[in-house]
Amino acid sequence: MSGHTIKSKLCSNDGCSNEFTPYRTTDKYCSFSCASSSAPPLKKRTRIKPITKKSLVKIRKDNETYKLVWMSRPHNCEECDVFLGDDFDDVNGKVIDRFRYSHILTKGAFPEHRHNIMNFNLLCLKCHEEWENGAKEKMSIWDKNERVIEKLKASTIKTNSFGRG
Image 1 (cartoon, helix red, strand yellow):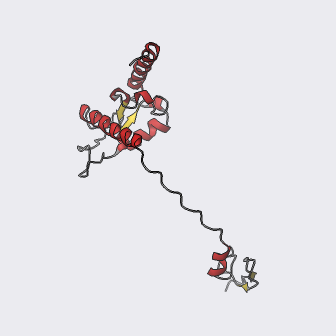
Image 2 (cartoon, helix red, strand yellow):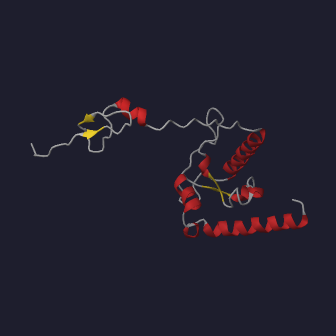
Image 3 (cartoon, helix red, strand yellow):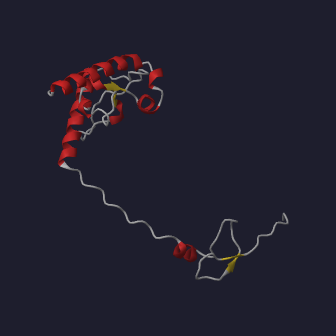
């Protein structure tokens, strides 16, 4: 034996006065029932919002745009050239790996370019995350994307100044 003794503790449950020998130094309760009755109540599960018709239309339009992008370009990451696969959708018709379709101008800031095929790069997951969260300016696609950004922003200005598109 090491000579180390474990001191007994009083149960931390308000309604219990049992003294117990803890298995770990962090143990606070004498039994599972004391621990469970002291635990805060579980949060109620929130209901998942139903998908609206507007959302379904947007998803359908996204999928149509992704297919146009997929069919118009080589199936390699535009940054690192890794092969992204041959298939656009799975046997159930669902788009495979939606991360492959990376918006150059974000959907939130430029919703008018959400479905513009010029506003896309085909990227692997690693490069998509780098584009979204890293140093875009250091990526090899930056120069090409900068020119695309200028064209897209110029078309936005023309559309907004003449009131049609």
